[in-house]
Figure (cartoon, rainbow, N blue to C red):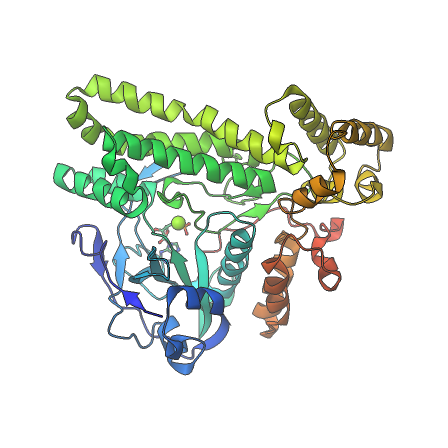
Length: 489
Ligand code: AMP
Ligand code: MG
């Protein structure tokens, strides 16, 4: 199988990417290597979990094909615009065409300072690296578009955070690292030619059909809106809370990126937030769709000069772009409705009142009684109703009534088949925060990677209820509950 490395984005303009070598580390050691992903990318065997591979993923010794660059981007962080952020601790090694001729970026994260590091050390602590490895691979197994984790290595060096912690480097794979913030950065350069070149690049790389549209840039905007609507609907349907939906953390490809203070909701609570830095709850669970729309408005702004060119009129361009962004609401709603209906086996009649009422009642009961979001939908797919009903211990009567109505709504179909299909979308195992903390503590405090490996293994088949991994299904006990997550930079 062919390995096809080639830089295209970093070559567009020196204004968009700066060449920058990784800073070698003292004593690299393996944490994890993703064999399946390496195979699909055609990575040569000598760069798998070998000594040579270790030196590559530590940034100590790069093969000729690696041409490391730090990418420039801007971004709205908690609604405040920062004109220059950029890869402060990440380096794009190369792009590569995989077995299906799809283009991916391979990036080291935590490989040392770059021209965009500002006050930072360019490094990562082991905790955030393990967290990103586990959660991004879990998201992939949950069929949610995401960046992937190819490798994790320990550096043998210490990084200073709230305390001194072991350092590590993650090798991230993404269908690109282009963000809403990247487009904002290009807009800020005030170079129409670059703006056009950038938009054309995004079209060519991610939305080639837009090139054929009557208005390619409007079509691009609509396609980005659509992929984001799909993504956020998927997040919502598994209770995922990203935690830092800044515009620099929103990809143009529609993949989830940057697993900082993210978490999966346990007890159903639409106002749930975890991120310690998100004091006001801007990025709480229920705010994710409107925030996505806000971010997409920022993206639309970057396309205005190009839309004006097509329309020959700024007012007209603003109107068209505004209408597109406002369209997010109904597009998102459609995906969300479909995803949630499928969770109760009503995918074929997602927008019918019976479906809507059942969902509304169920979510209301779950919220009232603080029922675990994941287990409620999973146990609904059981052969009998006992585990489901037991979740609603405060008021089993309402839960039983709901269950009877739900059964009745399926009287025309084979329930075993319906339940099997539900179990394909309602996971049994998700990366619960208290388990993540456990895994990180073991690795951080005693170098014990066994809990990490076991968790990764359990999460590879999230829709299987396997006895040997039963402990990963259970929500945190009150004493184990993690109520905040840190950015961990
Ligand atoms: P994040 O919170 O990971 O999305 O990062 C926001 C910005 O801060 C990005 O530009 C990062 O590259 C930068 N950054 C985060 N951590 C570090 C670090 N340890 N050293 C340098 N830059 C960093
Ligand atoms: Mg980021």
